[in-house]
Length: 202
Image (tube, rainbow, N blue to C red; front, side):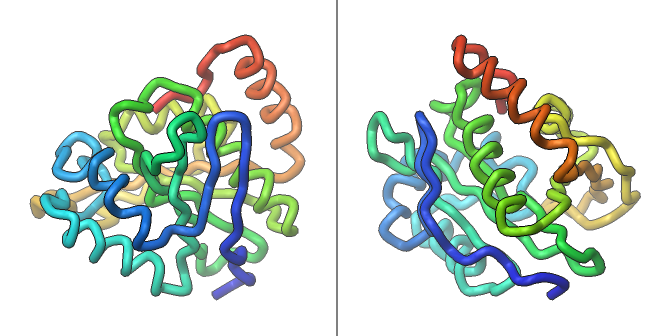
């Protein structure tokens, strides 16, 4: 590991609360996105068709010290609607990745993704990381657009990076935002959220 990973903690904004992912979140999470092929399309694992299958994926993230996963809680309802994760970035100093993110369809095209990214990027940079990385499948154009709207810069594409669950090859598109770039992007995103716009919908 190239840097100390963030410790599990609770982060909160207007619409969402991020809590360390735990087994108690699984019923809500399965209700939000279990068995939904479109929700899981780009995550690199088979679609969880049962709560037990979802639990196995969650357990892998929770028990692996290269990941710090959070349940995404919609404050309006108090229910978990997805999860998102800090991931170690081998080979980089003071760099951390945000990934393994999914949300149930009910919160697509809402402020949830934007608020989660602001919380996670703020927290990482506040801990002393100077680069936050995001990556996605080269075919996932919706995610790429959302990442760009947050303010991340395209860094490059790793061709034939890994196989998808169906056996086809995935090229992986990499983005990042640096600590000195973030304040202007954060101000822009906060201003748009304040007037009800959704600048980085999923």
